[in-house]
Amino acid sequence: MMITLQGVTKTFETPAGAFPALRGIDLEIHTGEFVAIVGRSGSGKSTLLNMIAGIDRPTSGSVAVGGTMLQGLDHDRLATWRGRAVGVVFQFFQLLPTLTVAENVMLPMDFSRTIPAGQRRGRALDLLGRVGVPEQADKLPATLSGGQQQRVDIARALANDPLLIVADEPTGNLDSATSGEIFRLFAALTAQGKTVVLVTHEREAVSGAGRTVTLADGRVV
Figure 1 (cartoon, rainbow, N blue to C red):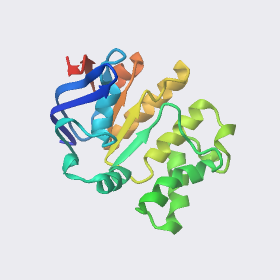
Figure 2 (figure 1 turned 180 degrees about the vertical axis):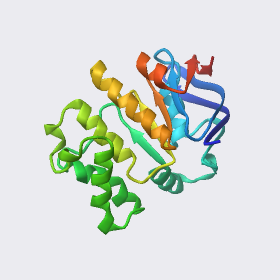
Figure 3 (figure 1 turned 60 degrees about the horizontal axis):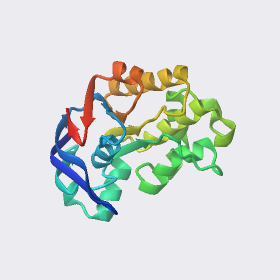
Figure 4 (figure 1 turned 135 degrees about the vertical axis):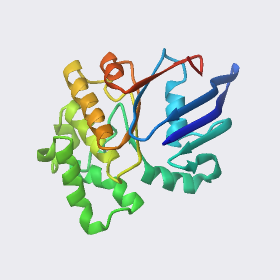
């Protein structure tokens, strides 16, 4: 079992009072699964993804990923774990504009120091080849199309060979043809043993995922 959530709740304090974003979530995801989290806006999808990735902490309940109980880690240990165990794919790419594509992919290796310095560029080039954009390595992100930037973002997420890939609306700004290519890339990663969990509104992702988890009002329905 890659991911286990038990009784996870998350309550945010707002000017209007307490808002329960998650209400007693129980969820298990196996290693190598491709899971799509769907639901209406405000249903708790992104909050659930943040719990799984260790980006945020639950108000109550437990989250375990790859055998690690996240609530037992302090801030620094959680950040170190996340850098090595989780690859995050963003909707808006968030590539650093002043770094080349290869340098962007190398950045997580520089932070976590999981790969020897002399091997980092070679690994970056290999990952860019795996996602189909090796010829873009020495270009700046602004010169790439949206689909190419998203592929670079996925390569960066794979930099430290993480156990888990999470993605929040990764194709929200892409056309349908490019979205389909990105979803097929995620499916290929699960075929290679990676676990992929993504939040999406795209029907193709739902049809391509091995399992769909639907949220409504902070509960799995």
